[in-house]
Image 1 (cartoon, helix red, strand yellow):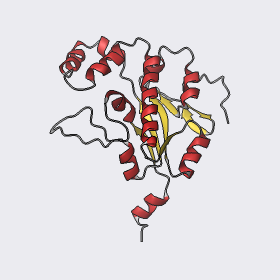
Image 2: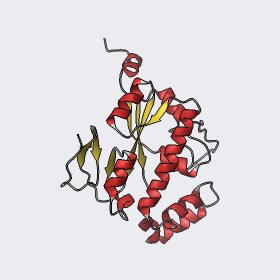
Image 3: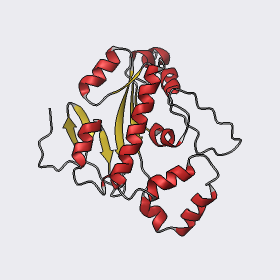
Length: 210
């Protein structure tokens, strides 16, 4: 007889390897610890499925939060898309999203702004009593799991976040970025940083930390 799925789930280390709580959290006034319940009968772009509460209820042990900054060129070279975004400006967060993408020429800095705010929201959730913690190294992941906390790691989706960065790896080190996928080019490469398998824009000439 197959094992009880609930038993398998409770005994396994459950990892959500790709979700997007950071950008919507940046644009929303609701905290990461707060439940997100959409009241819209149709489409609600600010509805968040990934919250501290949802991770707890789902028994998720490790979450890899993907920072995906929309590419500025998508709006610069697509008048129809700009018109569509303008038509959504009545929605909360849309104007701030437009400012983040179009009003911040330094996409590297804009990505950092999203990560900084998300880190604060995770810390606020922890202070509110949620069993959740940021993790930047393998040791911090192990420490969080040992304490019964959900470990949150940064990932970056889209090489446009690095387009203005002359020293990209320094930010990878600062935030403990677990992986970065070059979705525009359709390629990615792996290395090891402090024991965590990563995808990074680090030049291959640099020796990975072990």
